[in-house]
Image 1: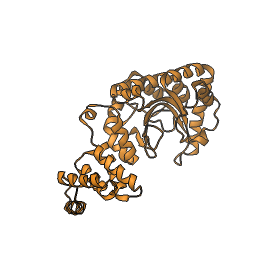
Image 2: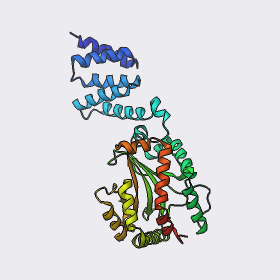
Image 3: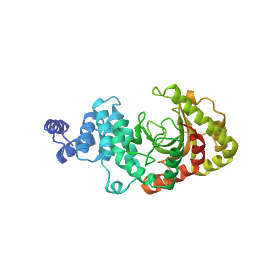
Image 4: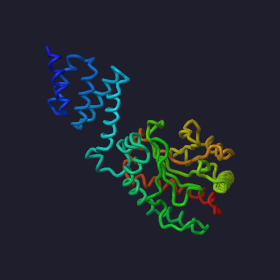
Length: 326
């Protein structure tokens, strides 16, 4: 039978020495094997696994500690640290990928949005480079130049990515803040319903930084979008949404997955509350939990191709909304 008092003394000695090596793992493992309700030993074991970079084992130990005492502050803080370090330590397979997999969404979940932007910037910039090389990017830039928009040589610039609320970052095309926006957004779940990337067309008429003139410009753009949709795009957009995982989103709400494409298009046609919502979006959603979508998200070339296809499909609507935006 294990000598629990002796093991406890040894575990505390090792902890005071900041020794979280194999001996500490063994000692605390023997304690929890003999005394499964020992919250402190489970917490120490989790710390040892964390320092050994054995992240899955650390999560198991710390979750066990919290199942015994849900308010244990040390275990809670250590579990958060494990998740953060695991997210920032890619496997060899993850290092070989160029897109956005579970690790990247874990970073978005774990880090404040501003820090997540910095952590994901290299991958996002690489995606921007691929999208900027597409023919649809050149067409968008040409429309902006012909209608008096700011000159620019790229659809997405390095500073196009912005921090949203927790678990959310987004990018819109150069000059697009008060224009109809070709938009890409990243969401982590939690805190959002699912880890996903959205790609499509959005209109932003809210926010404390919006002045009255800018709001009127966006509302006028949205009105042109609605008129074009009514006259020639209702069936086309509904068909595309049905085959491409398309959903609308408005305000701070998640995508309206309960609305079938025909009903979603009707909503877009008849909504008169953009100024109240502050944000209305229609586009494709790639949800990490879906195996096909995950393969696209994890490969920069595939994600750039889907972005190109989405922007190409929505380009006529964007162009109609953009007309005379200046």
